[in-house]
Image 1 (cartoon, rainbow over the protein chains, first blue to last red):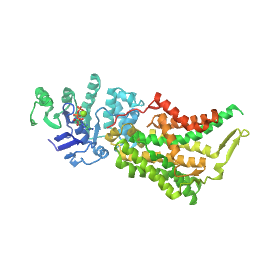
Image 2: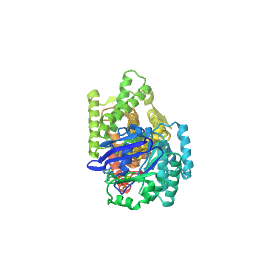
Image 3: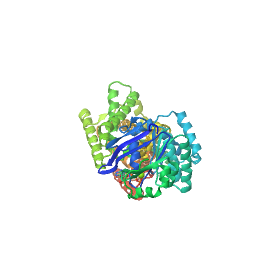
Image 4: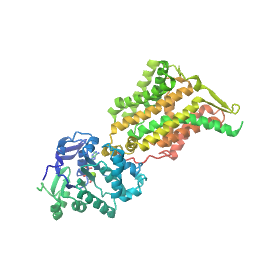
Length: 247
Length: 300
Ligand SMILES: Nc1ncnc2c1ncn2[C@@H]1O[C@H](COP(=O)(O)OP(=O)(O)OP(=O)(O)O)[C@@H](O)[C@H]1O
Ligand SMILES: [Mg+2]
C-alpha cells in the first residue's frame, strides 16, 4: 500500500460526557474507496465530522497527505482538499440549486469562470440539477437533494470526499443512479470515505471497509472478504464479534 | 381637499416612516437569522451613526461626507460589538445572549450620556434639506429630507438585494442564516460572515439613525430605543430572520401607523403605539411565524 492520503490515529471524540469515538484508527490510500459501516449511534458521523473539523478530537491525530489537520478550522480543511457531504443532506433550502453549488466552491475562493465551468460538469453528471437550477433546494425531492449535496461537496474540488449515508431517505431506484455516479467518480480516481447503512450497496462500491460499534473499530477488511463473510459482519454490528480481524 | 392628494400625502408619510423601520428591522432580522439572537444593542447603532455624523459636521466636514462617515462608523461599531461582546458568548443559552446584548445597550447608552449628556442636541441639518416643499396650494407637503430618506432607503435596499443574491459573501450569509452548521461543513468562513452581517446591519441602522435625526431635528443617546421596538414589531410581522420580511414588515408598520393617525379620530392618536401592539398580538395569534416564514430550521 502506498502512503495513505488520510491517516486517523487513535482518535477519541466526546460530546460533553458522551464518548462517541474511543481510539479509532483508520487509513485510506489515494484512489481508494473505504466504507464505514455500523449500527445507529456507532460513531460513523462523528468520525466524518472530526475529519472535517466540525467537532474536535480529545485525543489522537488526523493526518491528511502527510500533514496533521486536527487543529485546523473547517474552512481550512476544505481548502486542503477534504469535502463533506453531510448526513441528512443539509442543502440550503431557501437558496437555489445553482446558488448551493456556487457556495460549494466558495471555500477555495474559486474564480467565477472556474465555478461556472465546474457547475456545468455536475449539471452533466446529474441532468436533473440542470432542469432545477433556478428552483430553491427546499423544493427538491430527497434524491435530488442528495445529488445536490454530493455535487456541492465536489464543487470544492476535493482530493478526499466524505459521504454520510447518501442513500438515506432516497428511493431505491435513485440510490442505484447515485451509486452509479459515485462509481464513475471512483473510476476517475476520487478517494472516498463512505458511511452507509445499506451494507450491500456500500460493499459493492468500496475497496475496503471498517465496521464501527459504540465508538470502536470491531472489524475491518477488504470489501470482497466482508462480502464473503456476511455472518461476521452481522455479528460485528450486533456486538457478538470480538477483536479485530487483520486485513 | 382632494382625496387623491390626501392619499398621496399619507402615502408619502407612510413611506418616510416605513423606510426607517425597514432599515432598522433588516439588521435585526439578519442577525437573528444567523445567530438566533435578539440584538437589543442594534438600536444604539442609530445613536452611534447620528452622533458620529454630528461630530464630523462640527469638525468642519461637509454634510454629505459626514453622513457617509457616520454610517461607516456605525458599521464599524457593530463589528466591534460582535467581536468583543458577542463572539465570546456565541452558542450560549438564550438568556446569556439576551443579558449580553442588554449589557451592551446600557454600556453604549451610558457612554453616549457621558460624552454628550442626556439632553437632546440639535442635528446640524443643512437648511437646504430642511426646506418644506409645498405643492397644490399646500395640499401636498413634504420636506427634502423625506425625499432623501426614500432615495437613501431605495439605494440601500437595492444594494442589499444585489449583495445577497449576486455575491458569494451575500449568498454565504443567507446560507449561514438557513443552516449555520451546514455553512460550517461546506467550509464557509462563518466568523467572517457574521462580522459582515454585523457591518451591514449596523451600517443600515447608522443610516436610519442619521435619517431619523434629520427628520426629528435632534440627536440623543436614547434615540434608538423607540425605533428598536418598532423594528422588532416590523421584523416579527414579516417573519423574524427573513430579510424581505423585514422590509415588508417595516413598510406595513409605517402604513399602519400613518393610517391610525390619518383616518381615526384625533382623540385616539395618543394610543397609536398601544393599538399597534394590540394588532401585533392579534396577528401573531393567527400567524405566529410572520408573513414570510423562514425555512430550514435545522441546526447542528
Ligand atoms: N451533537 C451531539 N451531542 C451529544 N451526543 C451526540 C451528538 N451527536 C452524536 N452524539 C452521540 O454520539 C454517538 C455517536 O453518534 P453518531 O451520530 O456519530 O452515530 P452514527 O454512527 O452516525 O449513527 P447513525 O447511523 O444513526 O447516523 C451516539 O451515541 C450519539 O447519541
Ligand atoms: Mg450518522
